[in-house]
Amino acid sequence: MKNMKKAQKIVLICFAVILLLLCAELLLRPRASKNSLATLLYNWGKYRSASKIWDPLAEKHDADAIPKGNAAKSRYRQGDYDSAERLLDEALKDGKEQARLHYDRGNAQYRKDDLDQALESYKAAMLADPDDQDAKSNYELVLNRKGYKKPQKEDYQEDEQEQETPQNDYDNTLNALDEQESLDRQRQDHQTQIPRERWW
Image 1: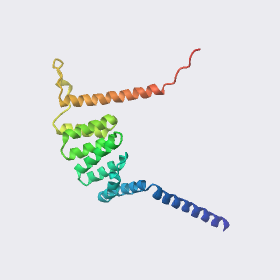
Image 2: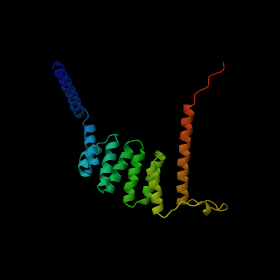
Image 3: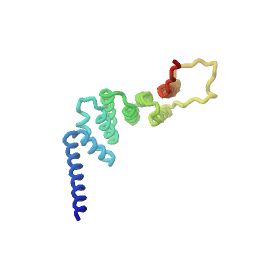
Image 4: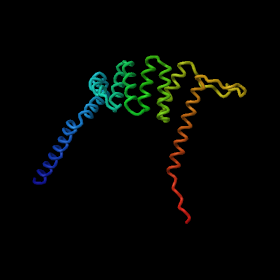
């Protein structure tokens, strides 16, 4: 019986400590708690409720782009693409450029049928994160919707001069991303090489 009471006391103490830590988290970091609650509501599909929590957090003029990006996603899900784009523009000004914010802005612009701006946003997302396959796919989708198609090899003629066209811009962007990825891999390989010992 003594062991049982001792185990119950330990469990009760652990529970009290956890509860105390949660209360401290709520008191000391209310912003993180609100963000967590809004994320939970967003994941449940309650976008308006999530917006009610994220909007005041997004209105604060600090360098944290996360609440603005989250509020923009919620607005996007509600069909308010203009507001989502505005919030994403603010988020990009506040923080360092983030590929996901550019991608989300491109989605909002695409929904508004602002295809040229959507292309620019997807391009910025790909340049910020060359591994972002979603941005690349959406970039190609917008190009296809605008009527551009990737030229086939037989379409090229060697004696023609290259002209600056949106198709060339498309190819140049994809080639630049491939080169950037190659350079990143080379830098990474170079940094991981073990230095040779000196012979003297």
